[in-house]
Every structure is written in structure tokens, then in C-alpha cells.
Amino acid sequence: MVSIRVFTLRDTESVISLWQETGLTRSWNNPHLDIQRKLTVQPELFLVAVDETDDVIGSVMAGYDGHRGWLYYLASRPARRGQGIGRALVEHAEELLLEMGCPKVQLQVRPDNEAVLSFYDALGYERFDISATGKRLIAD
Image 1 (spheres, one colour):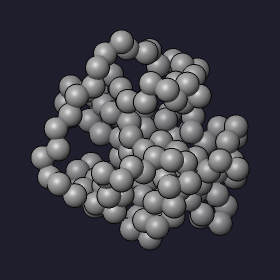
Image 2 (cartoon, rainbow, N blue to C red):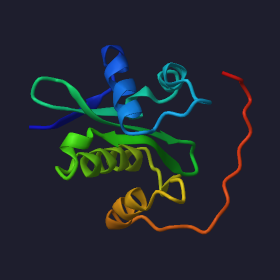
Image 3 (cartoon, helix red, strand yellow):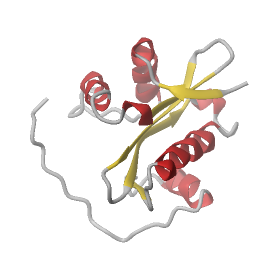
């Protein structure tokens, strides 16, 4: 049985391990700082999927800025793929965003990650032909 709940501090190392196992971490992003920062802004939108022993088997961060929602760090344990964990996390995050009045949700996927793009296609997400830009304000 899988359940979804809000992230707690005791989940930190399990979530980081999950992100590392699924290739979500990058050298320029400190996952401990990403978690600390998320816990200061809409922590109720940081969700984990857990099994019957409360082991973390999935995660998603969501956020809403008053204009649109965003999803980040969606992951599920590779050994548990195909069991609907990712779908359940996305749907739960979407429900929470909708309750906040969020009219639209977006996310970013690296263009060469066709498997993940196909996953979101199946959930009804629309691909955009855009360029993403960014600027680091705090060097980690």
C-alpha cells in the first residue's frame, strides 16, 4: 500500500537518496539547501509517497506564486516504477494547487528526457516550445 503525506524532517536523507538514485541532483544544487528553502515557503506542498513501513518511495515539490503552479523533484524509486506512484504524487499536488486557486501548473524537463516527457504526456501535460533562462542569486 502506498500513501502520500507531507514531507517531514526525518525524511530528508531518504528523499535525497531517492533524488540521487533517480538522477535528479545536480552539482550546482545542494539538495539539503533545496529542502531547507522549500520548508520556508509552502512546506505543505512538499509531498512524499511512502510504503506500509513509512519508507520514502516517491517525492514531489510543488509551488504556487499566484499566477501558476510549478512541480519539481518528482521521483519514484526505480524498483517501484509502473505502480502509479508518480501519477498519484502529481495528482495529489494538482489537487492541493487547485484548492489554492491555481489555474495552471507547469514544470521543466530536460529536452533529451523523452521517457519523462512521455510520462507527462500521458497525464495530459502539453509540451511547449520555449527556452528556459535563469540567474543564480545565491551561490551554493
